[in-house]
Image (cartoon, rainbow, N blue to C red; front, side, top):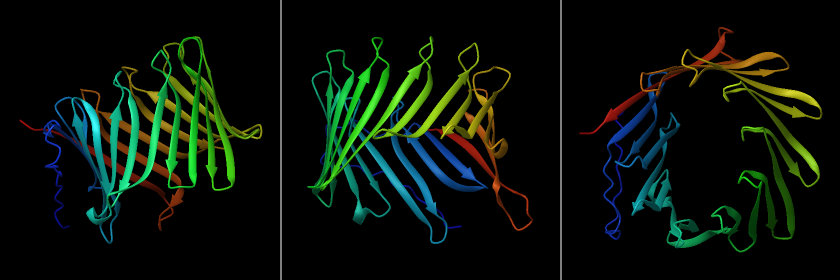
Amino acid sequence: MNKIFFLIVFLSASAAMQAQDTVFTVKVFENKQLTEKKSFGINGNLLGHSTRLNDDPELWFYEYMFYDNGHLARSEHFTDKSDMTVFTYTYNDRNKLQKKTESRAGSVVGETEYFYNNNGWIVKEITNSGNRKQITTNYEYTLTGLVNMRSETIVDSSKTMILAELYEYNADGKINRMIGLNGSDTIYDFHYTYDKFGFKLRQDVISHGDTTLTIEWVYGKNGSYPMLEKHLSDGLVVRKTKTAFNREGRKKKETVTEYRIFSGKMKPEKTVRKFRYDWND
C-alpha cells in the first residue's frame, strides 16, 4: 500500500494564530488498514482530521483547524485542495460564536449568525445558503437551562418546511424522551432508560406505536464505559459492537458484527477497528 503523507497547512496570512503544534495523534485502523487520523494540540484542540472515503481509487477527506487565542478561527475541508471549503468564525464580546462564514474559491456561499439570551444560552441561529435558502433554528429552555424544544424553519425558494424536536428529562436532568416532528406529524420518538447511577442502558425508537429499533449498552467492571452495544430490530440482534479500553479509558479495540450483511460464506460481517495513540515530545 502506498504511503500516505498528511500535510498540515499553515497560513502565512494568519500570523496572529497560535502555532499549530501537534502533541497528540489518534490513528484508527480498520481490518489493519489506516482509515482515520486525528491530531490534537497542547490545549486539546483538534488540529486535523483525515478520513478515508474510498479504497480504490484511494480517496481521503481532510479537515484542518486553526485557532486564535483559544478560539477556532478558521477551518479547511477538502478532498482536493483545488476544491476547498473554508469556514471562518467570529465571536462576540462574551466569547460566544457570533458568525460562521462559508467560502469556496474565495467567494462567500453561506453564513450562519448566532443569537443568545442574557444567560448566554443560544436562542436562535439563522443560516443563509446562496440567495434562496434560509434556515432559522430556535431554542426554548426549561427554567434550569435544559433545551426542551429545538425548531427549524426551512425556506427554500417558494417552499417552507417546519421541523422540531421536543425533549423530556428525568429528575436527574438526563434526557428520557426525544420526539421529532415534521409539522404536526411525528417522524421519530426516542425513549431512554438509565440505571440508578445514571448510566444509559437502553434506547428505544418508536414509530407508529411500535418499537422499530432498540439499542442496549452493557458496562464493564468499573461501570464507566459501555463495553458492549447491541442493536435489535423486532427483537433480533442486527449489530453488535464490542469495545476494549486501555488503562486510561481510551478505546483500544472495537469489533463490530453486522448480522444483516453476509459474506460469501454466509457468516456475519465483522469489522475490527484498532486505535493507536502517539504523543510528540
